[in-house]
Length: 102
Length: 159
Image 1 (cartoon, rainbow over the protein chains, first blue to last red):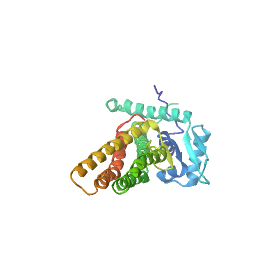
Image 2 (spheres, helix red, strand yellow):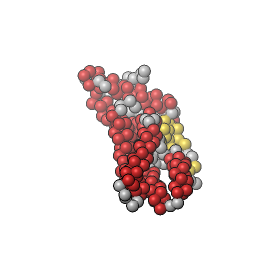
Image 3 (tube, rainbow over the protein chains, first blue to last red):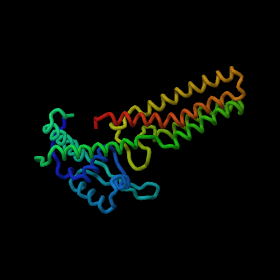
Image 4 (cartoon, helix red, strand yellow):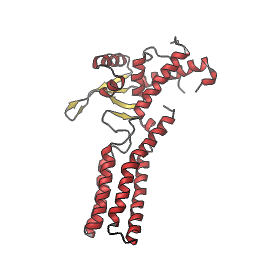
């Protein structure tokens, strides 16, 4: 059972998109997130830094084909926060329109 | 923490979440090289059967199977189409390898049945024709199979 918990850190649109992408994957390459969200490297790095500081994501730099990759994954804490946030969003929608509850 | 947004904002945020989920689901697939390589190998098997010595066909079948097993194990889950992400198993489902293997086993049966029928009908190169039919089914049906898996994942709101 997921406890609804609105998360101010996740909620801003860009961060919500990032965390939602990460929630659907085991890990995602930096470039994939950047291209899907059409962000600059620096803008995305800032968002990642915020989420990393909160303990919601882990940034890894594995060596692949002699190239340094940047992979990002959601931590258990981040997944818990995301699930709680989504549950809170559903709760808000349901409380406004009980017939629309999913 | 109490929330400070209205239902409209919440709906908009949920739409954002769903859109992100769809972007990852769109990555559930197998690399194109897998299907094309498999189709080419299938035709190669037919050519060897029709034109090669009998022993070569006997050797080629297990070599083909072993090569497939060696190359396919990393992509058969459908979660690693590209090197840019790994789709969560809960989202892709754990049934994809069984689905693909079942599809291929079915096509082996179709190839053998078609080859025998064509041979009985007096075709000059029954194995090549039968394997060509199967190769076309692999090249077209494989990606269609994965598209069906993606549609199923989209309908599953469990994530």
